[in-house]
Length: 249
Image (cartoon, one colour):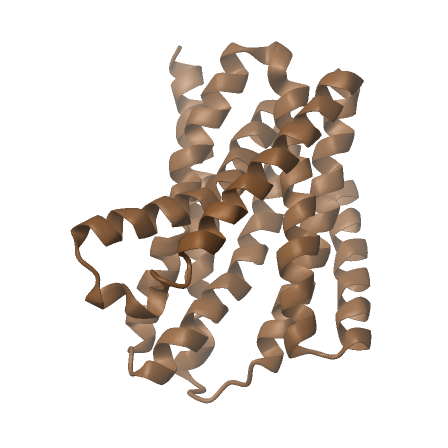
């Protein structure tokens, strides 16, 4: 039992690292106040390659435990992320982070709900991956942590030109990813108790992350950078992530 709770604490610790990594996106603004959005495009391209490689890593691991459960998990993850995105799109324009100081408590709860939906898949991915193995958990944690950096950069690009200090922008960036450690532990505990659902959980995380790459990260990257730059960056970052996985396996 002590080992069980110790592993849960480790999962929370690693998931918290992914949340803190979001704040790294604000660090350049301590030194350069006028960063161009081109860097956001490149950052999103790097994140796309890392997340794509990590997604297939999750699915491949799930296939080892059960092909059809993994496939079912991918489909459930796809449906969940599409549904979640529709909710986010419905309210995102009304309660965006640049207006966060102007909202009342009920709207703050709604914003937290939207952030939770956005971060849910990433938190589940961390929790489920540690149920697979320590190596898989470290691999997915690394991918998501690096992916969170351009999210923090994007938040900072919105807040700092409006007068927010870099330290506060860093805090709001981390705050936006706090649902990840909160979701990681329940996901880990569920899979640990119901081991037969491990391939479904891995498939869920992988399917949702693949959708996010092609529906959000790559389109965002293409808005800020040239197609050839994005394609080259995605290819290199995917290859490096696959290499990283082979080195830690």
